[in-house]
Length: 109
Image (cartoon, rainbow, N blue to C red):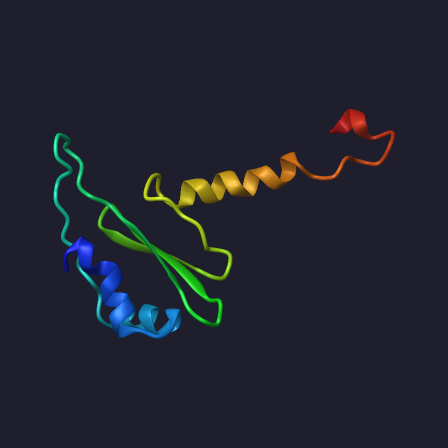
């Protein structure tokens, strides 16, 4: 399947994230990509699926292998870098803006 048709395939064929993911398990999709002009890189794409129940999934191919993140928390993405990298950064930031420690413990922060 052409990478440009990937999103439309899911829109046309599945009503829920669960249905789409089940289909990927039983009928794997092979994406065809082309080189980006002026580079030695191929076109890449993340795909975000969401349904009316609030379920979500992010799909991406890393080194030819399909990687899927499933759950309501997967809502925002970019095409670069790999999705695991922004997730690692996001897990770091809550600690940076946590409430201040009780008085007298500030030196340990």
